[in-house]
Length: 219
Figure (tube, rainbow, N blue to C red):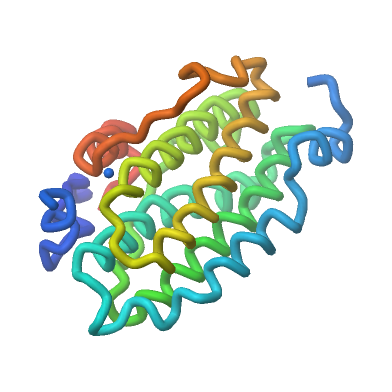
């Protein structure tokens, strides 16, 4: 029997709660070029995040460390989702190509955030993606939801981040997540501006509730 996912599951020391109280018809190559999903995307994010290791220090506000852990938890989820999709060997065509590229980006996000947080990093939860990584359509629809959730999560925390370097790193991630969202949206024929010309963030509480609702985190 697996333990239910709660805020306490990933916030063992209360830091996240403290912060919250204080955010197709293209060929594979052609699609990736059009979507802007190339190795450069991961490189840009990694370069900006390269400044993070010195930030999660004693001088970094606890609220910023909490936000980094919140981001790390979401990145764990995305990274595990794409890795499982790639490893399953069940995806085909553009879904397979999309998974392979995005898996690299999400793994880079996890690596950088963990390095920044060091011993303060929350541990990766256990996941059950309920077969969504083994079917092209289910995978793409789920990826669309996860990427848009990630964008709203980062945007929702932007005004709460106190350390400029952390804000820059978060901005470098959210633009990549937005590109992922746009790319998978293009595959699915979604509107390029699903929420209109301006986007809005979501609070930590709202995002965690949505993540819990997926049932993907099981312990």
